Image (cartoon, rainbow, N blue to C red; front, side):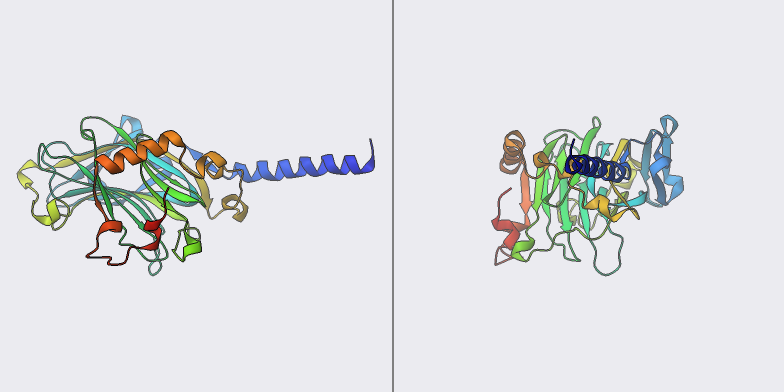
Length: 293
């Protein structure tokens, strides 16, 4: 064995160890209990732990809504929760699951907002993206199932290439990194994971025409199977830029053929609003809307 080959092997081993140590800082959390990774941020009396903390119930009544947040922030990764939404007449309510940098001036945020409905009407989910303080990128999709009848998985994948919002592994929105076109993309600020249940009957259902029927209160939403996989902040700066993180892998840099077909099916059959096509708000189509998935 030559000296150069020994150096080569040593280098390879060192690189492996560096990568391994970095990966140790990646949070791959399926918490034993809700309180392991989350805390109540609003109206503790309206948040109830279930099944030994493996699930929670959020409550909205005329006194208050409620909310919770992750104890840590993360820079890139994937977050998901199983949620069962408010059944029956939920008009005027909003159940939100989102990531937020929680910064005052230049905010980054990735939103799921579930908009309540009158009994028999479809539930709509509104997504929005804030990057470097700029939002107003709303899209709405009518869910193709009853989200109050059972739990469904809602997830946000966030890497250097795009943000993907999915429902039961079906992508409903893709926000690509179009920095080359001058479009801001969230990549500098870590974000926490949040959820709230609150009253928004001034806009949530049919633009505010449908008000909350408080005779149906209290309203309940249920959560379980909290999953956060990402680079916690504060933490080693090398984590977020490590290409070995699974969410940065080749297969996660764009939708595969099956996911792309599902995405197009949702957009063709269930999309009810897209800021990209709202000429009243945007006479000139925003540049990120000109790109595909």
